[in-house]
Image (tube, rainbow, N blue to C red; front, side, top):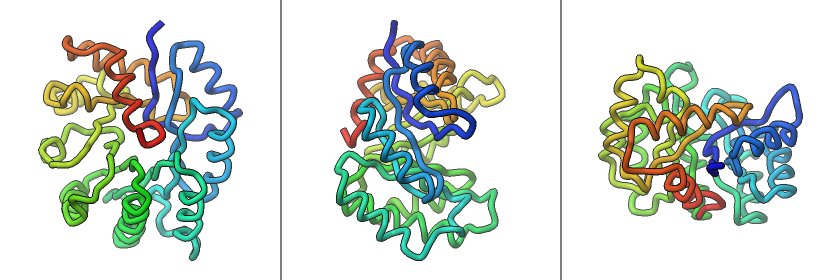
Length: 235
């Protein structure tokens, strides 16, 4: 059985994460990066990761929820980073489908600075905002940490950006309507490709990896597994 690491998943709402992960392990998904979306996720995710070394946790605030952060979210995040060197920062980012964009930018920049301070890999969400995202990231070079571009959409400007980027493909890679996404797989360096479920159920990662492998005959599942180890627990 091949070994797969899901580079981006979330807490389940209707069952225990333990049950979800056991089911995934039976299908060859041997590890995952479990991403927070709100502050209320943080302690639960840290506890899960402390009990299972195959689970890497990323703490952050999803841009959809940027306007609901507490006044002390940043100090709480730094305290957790101080106490756990294996933590990543995520899911953070920008999303123009929401009307809180200015607040998103403020939260994202602050979280990015925390990731830089503690040298932590970041897991980025970006929708219709790559111009602004790349401008921000460029302003922090050369101090940027490793970056997982979650649910990569095939944007050429992102592919051309000079930073330590990993491109994570969701099950959308198998959908012919996402032509740009499918074509982008050919242009990503083979050592920078990841796969993800972007789900509470890790099993869609299998669809993602099968889709990538059907489009790239020069890489194997083991290559993608080893790529994931480069960001797991910050490498």
